[in-house]
Length: 160
Picture 1: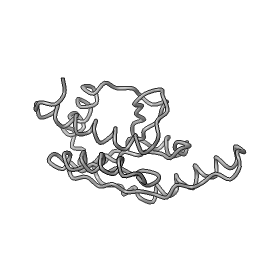
Picture 2: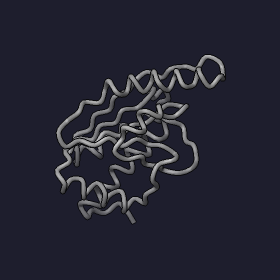
Picture 3: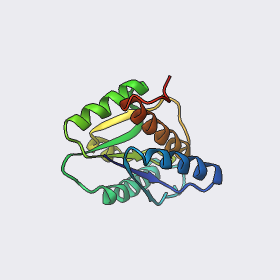
Picture 4: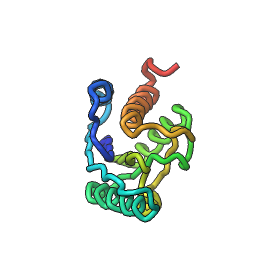
């Protein structure tokens, strides 16, 4: 399977880079991983129109990175999305694999979230929590959960 992560912004701090690199290496035993970063756009002022422009600009940049492949799905991470336990996410991924899905693209927004139009286009909105997390942390958390899912699907030790 191909796992593609399209994320807004770069990992600037070394500790995020090291954690992401570790889980990317681990995940490589189970899937081909592609990580694509799109530039984070800074908001000018606090006006809602400025936020909408930023989300639209970042959404356009993300859409340009989404290649439509036969048998591919797009999952957007969003606080308002569906919450799943790790076992449920692993079961969902396993079912999609059985259905012939070859690629799953996971989208992580920036500090302001994701463009509403992009959320509407996603095949699944997934929530890790109703809490808000830094987008750098979400990248690490997503990679860890994907690694956990593959370990669960292969019945290998890791998940308790």
